[in-house]
Image (cartoon, rainbow, N blue to C red; front, side, top):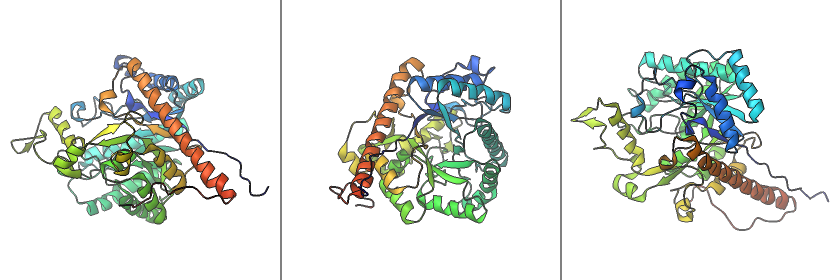
Length: 414
């Protein structure tokens, strides 16, 4: 029969960002032997059932301009780039990839690449170029990170900063055959300022504006988005509407990477402070001045944490009302919407589990292993359910002109 379409669901692989366990390898072992940390993470990922890792790179803690005490969720320098990542280092890591069967999805470095201090900006941009060089030697197709923001300038002025600083960085990616995938976290607690949007690539409107700048400069193919639904929930958005907006505007191709990290909104926090978060009396300012105590600066994150808490996929209760109110991620519809609305290679694009649920973010590998294993399994099974529904509804039934029942979640609904 010519109108028969076989049932062929396409499942996404599942990975883990290595910042989930910052010191899997004790620092007294990894500092003198930096690639041991990558080898250990590849094996750990295999043990918890992951298909890949997103390899976290960061400026070494001894060299970073941001003290660890000031970070709500400290980054991980699993990939240590104090010394150049050369061919011999790459061969060692590639051997571990082969032995464990775990791939490296991309190299991730999350920092402010538009920092207002010229020397710090140059340091961070240079580090990202080093991460790109490592990505090439490891045979991965992308790096992942932020754009950032110059705190001394307006958002429109930051578009000019983007063209000045970030376009050359994208040219470096182009020269190496890489994509730069931007995660859209607005980073509201990154500084003690009153700015909520400290990473200018925080929403589809700015993604499109930035991509248009990239197109004018010949690097449009390098600028892509690594979507994370937790940030949509933080800003009162829902995934289906974001994906629909991109499709409607002709930018359904922009998302080429995905984090699976949720967000659970605290209705009491929203009642007290709204979606702008806590603006005063946070503890990061003392007597009208920004505190000089690094630990106090972590209180800037109350701009976010007063109204929500990150979710490790699978750890939040099933809550249909929260899904409808955009106060928690509807994981099943998230995966359905991606297939229905985005131009993405689902067979090769991993869902990267990013673990930032603070109460479960234990830094003991034996305690964390079953937590990550459960989240990886949950993520994989949710994606398989969505893939099955999509294949059955949009391919098998559609080929036989059989209608899909009901309406489902609708974009832009209010």
